[in-house]
Image (cartoon, rainbow over all chains, first blue to last red; front, side, top):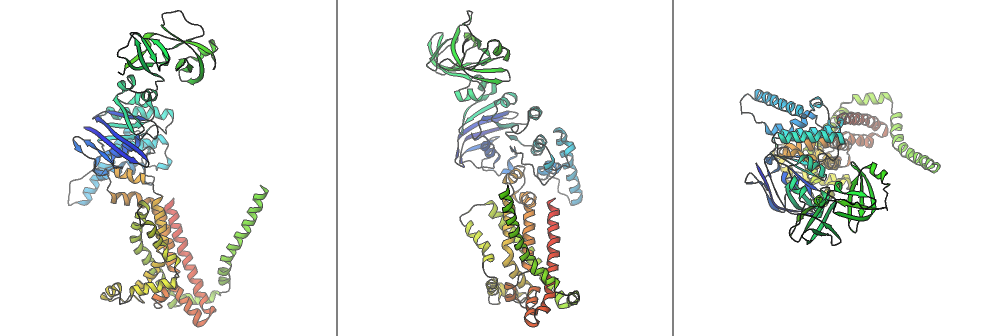
Length: 361
Length: 259
């Protein structure tokens, strides 16, 4: 299967999607990453057929499905708030698509036909519920279920449709940390079974842990697509870099064979330069902080003032002003040892080899 | 806190006056009617027939027009169109026009000179003075209650759920019957109860369309006019009790569904 979204544009409630294009192959886990309000959910609704685009096409296996009715597309959309039917039990929710999907051979014995269909529906519901670990909830109503359980019911119900493509709208956003981990591994499992998935989120960590391909969306435009590795290692713009969690991303100008000027303000040494301008990425973990200048093999030494200290999972993130802002991560022990505090001046050192230069010329 | 309590007391006092205004005349009527009069009136075949006629004509009006009104309520809840305000205004029209005027309008609509009247007389039915004519008059004045309640019910059904059902392969007709209608059912049932109750109590429009056969409100009026208060009161008491019993039973049914 191959899904192609071709130059889709849509103006919707004062919001504008412009020339959205990407393609997804069978078995792909494609994540559309973007801030809230960037237009991610509308893309899913257009693919599902809930919203008609102003222009552009949706091509599925060489067939143009842009004008096809919603119920014929078999594009299973899991809504952000699950949209589980409140007046139906978990069993009835999962069985809902099966009544349209399972077709029995026409027979004069209508009772027998009905019984066989019911049996097939029941078997399929139990199989899906077991796969989603919700078989114990089958006769409960949605208002008695937790967020994680509702999410699984919505997933099971959509998978019952045997969707050509599973569309997930921020599936982890309203779950707590433990449930997120559980659901992440469940989604990986579903994808490993061959299910093509398009998933929209604003969390770059979800993209790293789940996707094999990602697209970055900003203000209604897809600004970069590629494999996860390509996008995270070669962000094409500052927005992409910042959005993918890379804080030290600068416009760079090549001054000489080993010297780069960052943002027209700070000169650094690098051994990896081509062209005349591009971007520089620097991992916050690769920066060493000291109170005095270190005499060592580290070729880049910058002096600046700490303007912000942000506690993080890895320790403390320091934002240091050296004419440009550079983020560095150090441990809490180092903060105590060096008596680091906001307003203090420190030295930043990093190797020339720590600089990731992307040619943009 | 003190101020709040004072305001509360004033409001409770004013509210009590309103409640007393509703309850006192009814209670007075019940207390001033003897048990023997009520029993004798209840045994009166004329009274029994009129109560039965009132109940079933109102039932027919409610159920027949529900089939027509529910789809209209759904369209109004789900669509925005240029004439929507006009349609909403038309729906509320029967509430604001005098019911005797409504009766005249209905009468003009169902006499033998009209298409409706001619069609009915083709089947041997003269709508004027016929239970169907009574049902039409009842429906005319009470349909806004059902339409507005059903519309509110459909508005309260998140369209996301309908979209989810379509996305799961259901046809629009299946979505309506399995998602929209069951989720709006509470409001629709409340609307039907109100329409039924309003239809049963209608006098002005019905008396013009059909003095005979006599529905109970017309019979109460007729007995009052011909024989006075003492003779009309037991019929009124019995009819109020019947209305209340139906109203309570239907409300209980509606609450049961809510659970």
